[in-house]
Length: 247
Image (cartoon, rainbow, N blue to C red; front, side):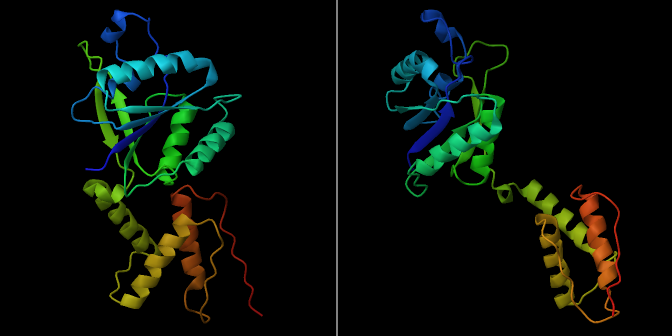
């Protein structure tokens, strides 16, 4: 099994507590996730701002007491405005690009329970784009009982691993292809491949689509169907404008 590295923000509110024994009666997500016997964390990259340096050190010490095998690496990451999406995304992107990730040698979990909502969104986007090459990690407190460890679960953004979701995507794609063919089922393999390709390109790109073919081949009808499909998917607005460029 490869060693596991967790990347996450210090929770300036959720991880904070009185510096006394009573703190162990409170769920603190950063400390709690290292208390699970079924989640061995070998390295924790703890992101925090300069004003929370003392809290970060305190949390790192508590992690060392409950999980001595976990190496905590504190990284200062300061924001002028932690709610500014552009600034937070940019600095997290710089962090991700500078970090020597090695997915073949390590597994990575990105903790999205702590940090501002903006930071959580940015972590999600960077994980989805594979700048952070891992899975998402969610933690939460146990309901109704005192359990400082709380509970945890992971989310793999590779949706192909979820059979029910993959099935729904396949059904939606087939529905879109059928829409482009005006509901006419055809066994012409070349035509079906062309429609499938047009469906993928039309829904995944905002670039113009050039349809070529002889007069009477159905280009105008297909163009209208592409427009209607993109409008159904809320990708475009406004009326369809047909211009006859014949000379």
